[in-house]
Length: 169
Image 1: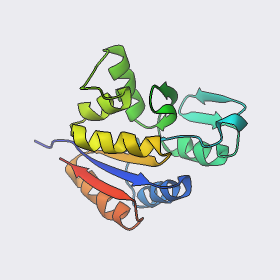
Image 2: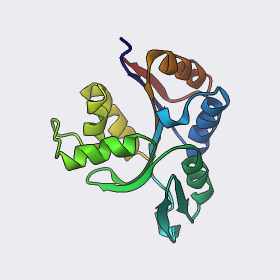
Image 3: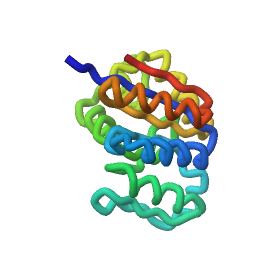
Image 4: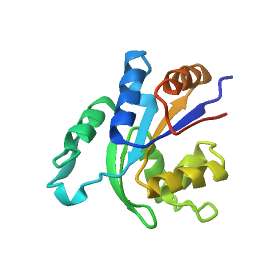
């Protein structure tokens, strides 16, 4: 029986996470296994946000970055989370967050983002580290899937120089 595992990488900038996503795509990794969480640095400049099927449209200083990622990933959402602020999320993590919101999951003081990550088997101490990264406007890239997928993703991402790279089994 194959158990799903997760790779979580933290990046300093949208350019770094965009490079990482492109590397994963070029390797042939299923883009439906990727999620990204981050702030839009220039929310004052955003004129509009909406989701059209599997594509998000955003205008503003980082609109090209987010729009390009939404074209690769499936599902997108904008959340305002107390203590974390406004976050843009793309990929399957959107549905895990929605599930946590619908079931009112509360896990030891974690945010709804933390509760969604916890439901994937990510330990609480790591979640606190990821939430701290989001508070400092960093980006989180998550790959969740079968071990062969996450092992490949970890190998590829290690070459993209993330700030941290964790494998949660």
